[in-house]
Length: 152
Image (cartoon, rainbow, N blue to C red; front, side, top):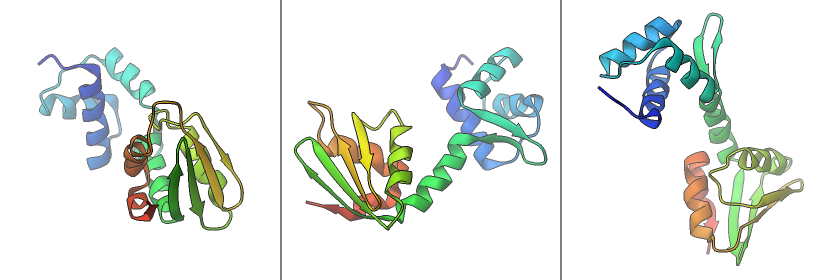
């Protein structure tokens, strides 16, 4: 079965989240069971593109997955989110604004020009033509609890 890169890489992430995998051969077998046949070279490129590393005793670990755990923890630190025009303000628990800003800055899918963080306040600068709804749509998967903190 011919599968595009995005679907194949998503299948890899799904497999690694479902069970530990300790070799590329084992991963290729799981992909084959899912109907995806791939070469070792393609699998190596996918693992590199997905920033997946092999950790002794743990098998292949996605840094994206570990970032997800960090985001879930940071999500509970968000107190309030409010937008005005092309600016957004996120209030956080004391000392956590920089961590949340850094996390947002490293996720290109969030449509912001940049962030500025203090101790408990984070400023988001939106590009022209992007709305608060666009930003929230990108932030909700990263910080699941954020939708409950939006102030209109």
